[in-house]
Figure 1 (spheres, rainbow, N blue to C red):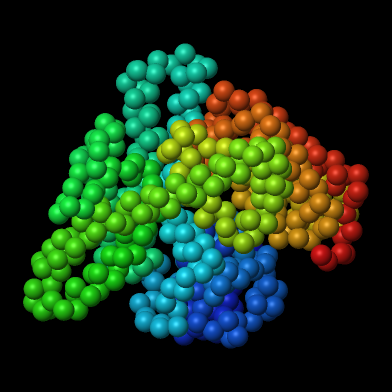
Figure 2 (cartoon, rainbow, N blue to C red):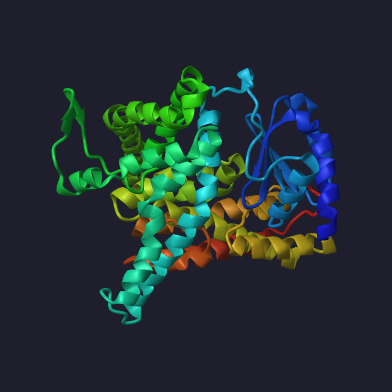
Length: 455
C-alpha cells in the first residue's frame, strides 16, 4: 500500500468506527491500530476488514484491534491527524461506564496497554545482554573489561530500572501525574530498599507496621498497582487543596500518603501476587516441561490473537528477575518459527499470485518476529497451514521443554533473538527452532492448501 493512501485509509477507519465521538483512546503496537470505543454497535467491523491495507481485526473487550502490519505507525500518525487526536495523549473524558471493571479481559488489556510502550527498551537491552554473553563465552572478551562493563550497563539498565519505565507508562494509562508516578518508582528503588534486599535484612518498622525489603528492581506489578492507587489519591488531593496551593501542596500531600502506603501495603502485596503468578507457571512447568512446551509452543499464535502475549511478559520478567533466566520465551519462539515454515510453504505451494505474495511477505515478517500478518494472511486462511503451525510449534516446544532451553534476557520471540538463547542448553533451542520450521513446512508441502477455503 502506497504511503499516500494511509491518510485515506485513516479517514475510512475513522468513519467506520463511528467517528471521533466514539473513540476514548487510540494507540498502536507493532502491527495493530488499537481503538478503545464507547459503543461497539456503531463500529462496522465487516466494512473495516474489507479496506485496502487492513488484514483483519480483533475485539478485546471494548477495544478494537485493527490489523495493519508493519506500516501501522504510519497509519497511526495519519489517523491522529485526520481525527485531531494527539499522538502523545489520550482523550481526557470521564466515562462512568468505562471505569475499570475488574475482570480477566480488563486485567489483560490493562497489562498489555501499559507494557507495550516499554517493550522496545527491554527487548533492545535484552539483545545487548545476549551479545555480551556471546562475546565473553565464545569470543574471548574479558568479562571484567571496560568494554564489557559498559555493554552490561547498556543491557541491564532497562531491566534494573524497569519500574521507572512502567511508572511512566502506567501514569499515561491511568491518566495521572507522570512525575509523581516516577517519584514513587524511586521509592521502590531507593538505596535503602535495594541494600536491604541484597543484605537479606529483616523488615524495618514504621509506627509498628513492617516495611519488608522485597526485590523491586526488574518488577512490574508493584509499580502498576502503586500508580493505579496514585491516580485516585492525586485526584482527591487535587480536589480538596485550594487551587493557589496545588503546585506545591498536592505533590507534598500525595508523597506523604503514597510513600508509606506503597512501602507497607501496596508494594509487598503486589510482590506477593507477582511471585504467586510466577510460581504457578513454574509449578506447571515443573510437572512436565515437555507437555508445557508442547502446549505453549502449539498455542502461541492463539495467544497472540487474544493479545495475552503482552500480558505474559510479566511472567517472563518475573522469571528473569527471580531465577536469572526464563523458560517461557524459547517455547513461544517455537510457534513463531513454525509460522515461518508454514508461510514459506504456502509461498511455494500456492498457485494464485496473490497467495504467493502473501506467503512470501508473511514468511519474512514471521522470520523477524512479527506474526500478525502471517496469522491473518495464512494461519486463519488455510486449514492445513493452521494444523502445520500448531504441530510444528508443539514439537519444537516439547524439545525445548525436554532439554531445558532458556533465555538470559527478555527479547522478541524470533530467530533474531538468538543471542539471548545462547545459554548452556542453547543447542536444544536451536534444534527446536529448526524442527518447528521444518515440521510446519513439510506438513503444508505434503497436504497442500485449498486456496479458496475459508476457516
